[in-house]
Length: 344
Figure (cartoon, one colour):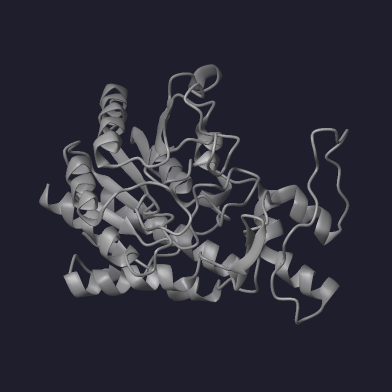
């Protein structure tokens, strides 16, 4: 399996986040990806390669130019306004439902609230470079499939599945898996995206919700109690021409492998009926029983089972790293999925 990684992610290193009504240490930190990289090296799953550079066109095929331009210079504008020692740019206000217009001026605070949707996704000096490199990592993994690889792994950080075409949030700035899916589609592939992160991939869903040509299937915690709260319900099945090309499988708190496996069966049935010839997996590992911000009960060996089950679809498969915040376990359980796939 070819593995792609960029050290540019180290430039994005949040210190704090406001989450669950408190200001605390950030959990989406560089050590997440570094733990995975070290475990990949130890277990020798394949070469760890630097990504190629793909330019801005693949990003613009998914994301609005206004969001791209904003992320590129947001932190410089923030520092100009609040001083060089102001490290993390975060919004303080959002346009609410009663807002009669979404007009905004050139004020950095207004633009943060316009483009961002939460208080846990800061923009730092190196954020844009890290997010931009994650896109190249994802596209390099996509290119490996087109070159004939059975599978590839994009060690993408920051993650991506909460970012939509014109909004960032949920630790995500650009949607790495959506950009890769669009790239595959432009090459003539029939693409299915399987999102196994604990949190619903609301950004990926929004990007493809009106389209019949890319299938999105998500197994996640029920948004009635879990982030992102406003997306991921079972009755969200696509819109217009996209009706039927979106499947959400929300699960209750405390879900273990037995219940999770039933959702996998339903997900696979839809992927097979769609006739996909390429599978992209948004590989979130926050379903782990000891994840600090999630409430599922999957154990270490369950990730071998997950990988083996994904392999049973017999499709060229690209894995993209998403969530997962237990730093002691994340390297092991990520590689367990990949080893389970390779042995499946």
